[in-house]
Each structure stands twice: as C-alpha cells, then as structure tokens.
Figure (cartoon, rainbow, N blue to C red):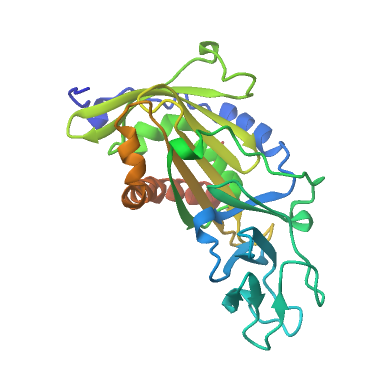
Length: 323
C-alpha cells in the first residue's frame, strides 16, 4: 500500500509506554530461562567442509569444521600439543590437521583434545559449552519455531559491540524505539495492549503493529510478536500481513569472559523470510543474490541498535543507568 509518511517529529511519542520497570522485568524473566549451555556461534553456511572456522565464546577458543559426512565438529581451538590455533589448520577428508606439527583430529577424543556437542539447525550452528554456561546441559538448544527451510529465504548477519548479552536482549525487548531510532525502516509503530492476546502459551509476548518502509511512500503493514525463548535469544515473528510466518531471530553470544571490564558481545541475527505469494518461489531461486541485501538491511539497523546497547552498558557500568 502507499501512504503519506508522517514526519519523524510528528509521530506519536512512545516514552510513556516504554516503561523502564516493565522492560527490566521482561529482561529479568528472559535471562532466568534456561539455555542448556548452548551458544550460537554463526551461520551454518560459515562452517565449511574445506577449512576450519574459529570462534570465541566467553573467552573460550572454539574451532569448528565439517567431517566427511558433513556433520559439524567442534572443540577447543587450542591444540593440546603446543597450543597452536587450530582455526589456522587445514581440513582434509573431514579431518582437521594442525598446521604446526600435523596433529590430526577426526572429531573424536584424541591426545587430550575433547569434542564439544554441536547442533546445526540448517540456518545457525550452536555449540554446547557446559563449563561456560554452568547450567544442567540439554541434548539440544531451544530453537524457536520457524518457517520451513525449503520454503524460506534466509540470511545471517553478525555484528560485535562493547556490551553484554543482556544489553542486546534489552534492546530487543523494547520495540517502542523502532520508529524513532529507525525511521528509515519503520513507521506507525504501535505496541498492542497485553489484552490483545498471546502467541500460544509464550510468556511475555509483545505484539506490535508496524509498517515496514519499502520504497518512497510504499509501506507494508504487519503485526509481529516478540518473544524471548531463552536468555540470549529474542525472536520477532510476523503473525499478520505480508510475509506472515517470517521470523527474525536475534542471538547474543558473549565473546569476553563474564565480568570483563570491557565486555564484547556478538549479535548473530538470522532473518528467515517466507510468503504465500506464488511469486515467492522465484525469490527462493534468487536467494544467493538476495542474501547480501538482507544482511545489509540488518546491518543498518544494528549499527543503531548496537550503539543503543553499548550506551546502555556504559551507563550501567558507571552506575548512571536511569532504569
């Protein structure tokens, strides 16, 4: 549809609705949920069969690769022999070979190196780090409901900010800022009253009516629901309007150890677009061309949102946070 855009300064203020106590309460409940010690470490496409990938989670070096059957393998990124970075090694026929002295790892326990549980959900890769998480481990992570991989176009954006995971989650649990901080993407944002209903039995579901800007005065009005299924994840799912069923998953993975004076957090955001329109089949065929644009759009939003999260951490760390 086409409409006349409301001037930024003339839109309805949302500061009264964005109650600090309510956001803090939702954050507290979200961070109290269990993760089973699972952490998102990146896009499934980034873990390739021809070379290892290196990640850091809470100060722990992680190396990942695919074995000869295409399964993701992971473990300490520090070679047990003399400490070489295994991410700089090579993968040959599903075996990771250290480039310092040729120690070969097939993904099973060997020479003091132990594998860590992994989960590849087809879009993202998760690693279970029991010593980091400190919870009772679970067999698999909490993966929110998604559109089928075969019927969706997915893209994954990763950004890094000086903040803690809770600052990223708090940003996502405050949808009231959307049209003010991101006027290039959103207009007419309204957070619906709790009485509007819940998404099944999901606790703390926030329903939002908003219009996405497409081009010029063209907008796409939708209703979306925000939920936090585990302590480092917030999802936005479109429940009414164009693209119903599409999901944006935001995952916050700590890079620095807990309690660091200068924390670093990776935002790994998976966008899974779906549509019932017949023409969407063509979009799926063009997915390799669409993914860079989808990542760019997510990156533009997160440049602003990471500044928001970093500001929140700075105020908290200095005792000046007003909430």
